[in-house]
Image 1 (cartoon, rainbow, N blue to C red):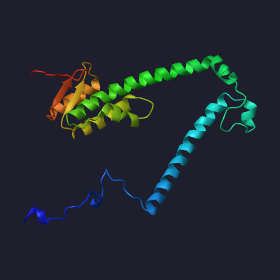
Image 2: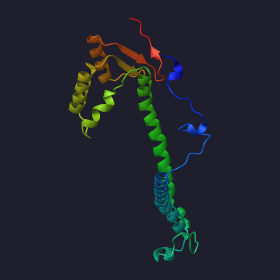
Image 3: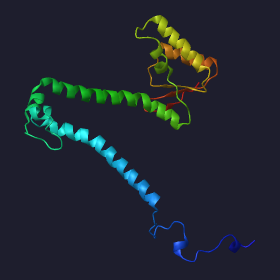
Image 4: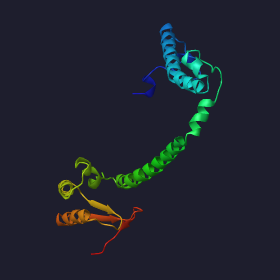
Length: 203
């Protein structure tokens, strides 16, 4: 069958259902939908931005005017007494310092935990850090019994793993037991440095 029989050839660009070079005519229904969408967008923007704007203008407006409801769109009785009192309190600087410490330490801990997992995922593996997974169910008080229970759960989970990876040169007693159990079950054990470089052990 000839390709020319598959469809009619458009005689003009106006016959094409959609053409970026041709302005499309909107029906009354299209205009109504556009109006509703714009109205909802405007309402959403105002509902989100106005409370933020009010907080800003109220922060340097006369407190009596704010309490009396006289401040709506523009500040009234501009004063910076509130800011002076806030920055005169030494605890505000301690709060900023705590925020910086929490951000830096939290980011460092997060990177230390997620980088090995991301490295494992890049090797098409699903990482499971049992020493981080099970202790959260052991309660806040650590005892030899709870540690032994967590290790027992980790060893059970190990039986469903294809490989055992450990990072760094410091191996805890619990990790030694996991490595020993993995080798006993003929599960490959791989050692990586803290820089995620594999260490080859010649047996």
